Length: 70
Image (cartoon, rainbow, N blue to C red; front, side, top):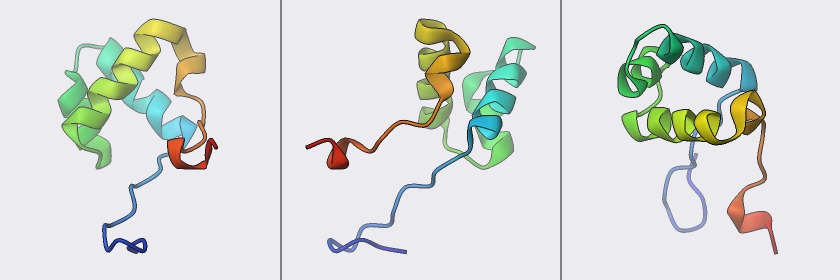
């Protein structure tokens, strides 16, 4: 589905899916390969890995969209 600008909406992954991807990264899979295995993009895998590295498992929780933080 697209928004008012015609761009497709970004896929939202569950916390469990993010944790599964990071668990795969901890076992030796690269962030890009782990993300690709669940259908996410390479950059998404690296973003989840960075959040995990900075905040631990709590870094993978749901966050409000930057557009709704007004």
